[in-house]
Length: 251
Image 1 (cartoon, rainbow, N blue to C red):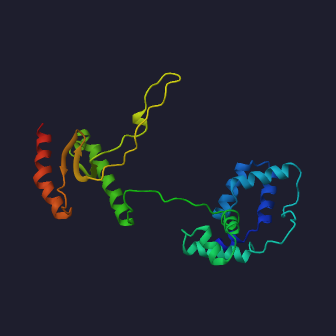
Image 2 (image 1 turned 60 degrees about the horizontal axis):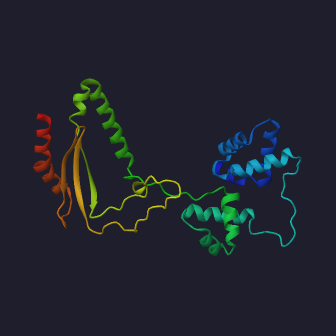
Image 3 (image 1 turned 120 degrees about the vertical axis):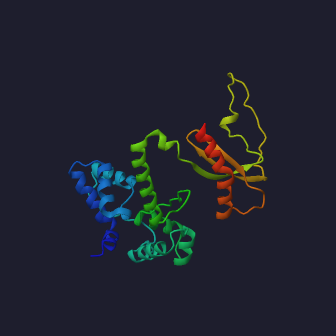
């Protein structure tokens, strides 16, 4: 059985019948929505939709079908059109409603309705992370972390004192203050302080920084135009970090 196709095949009337049934079991809108999310996953209706139908059934409505509307019947939201929209999204999840509407020759509002109501989709921005790791890299980090924990259990603080971390950062010629940093204590009726808008400085330099649990060991500015690669890092480790680390341990 194609589970995804089965989930997608539930009509709105069928979903409303599920809501009505669980309402008879004295389930709350939150519980009903959780049940639908567990079963239909991304094809489940939103919590607001569940809550509105719970309210309608509580107030006496018994029919689960859509109310009759005057005017031209809406045919572009048919199951076939919903499937076509779903196929487009599966191919490219960054498509906008305008692009979908233009591709399928439907209205923008219809595309949005199919995406949000029929398919239960919502636009989610990507989460910024320092690096996108492969499965092998993640496994290596788990192994390293477990080894560190084992060594810490044996040597304690002595082991932590031997760990040196490094990173790169850009230092700008001018960093504008945050709005919170410019806040001042003022009395009632006192005018707000003003500050001219200034952009971040265009001049910048890269710094390679190494530090341990005591603080910064090395803050090395990279010469302008210098390419930072493995060979350059090796030279910095030998000429800068090693002497600084030895001095730190002796202290």
